[in-house]
Image (cartoon, rainbow, N blue to C red; front, side, top):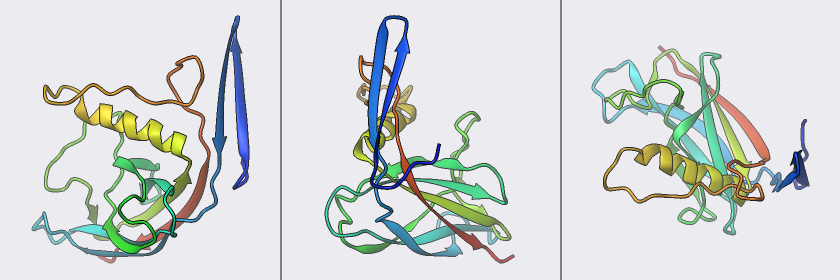
Length: 185
């Protein structure tokens, strides 16, 4: 269903004798991308590979959480390798940040000099979602676990969900902005 911004939604699931509940609030679309641009990648000599740069406006006041996805040439939307951010460092500022191409986590990711880059001629759409803290905490801990699997130096992290009875998962609402750029050949 399509929710409304600044409304809270409750979920109740009954399985046998167990009841699971969760709550989410769809925030107002407060943190937004003001513009997109592209530039030659600093990490790759190939002139056909470029990075996309977003100019983002964060409103004053802590507590703005986002998750982003990218779609390239009308393909599916994939989340960034690290797709969630808070505003503890950028509170109330306008700033520029590179937007890495999202990754399909069902395939093996290659971390070479092309990781996160786009090709000249690509049409890139960014889905920039404002989310509540529970949704942010779920994806932040899930992505940390995903990135640290197999590392003998990482600390174990519990994935933080918002579903009762210690169920793994979350119930979340997203306030989305879509913005695109066509990178010239």
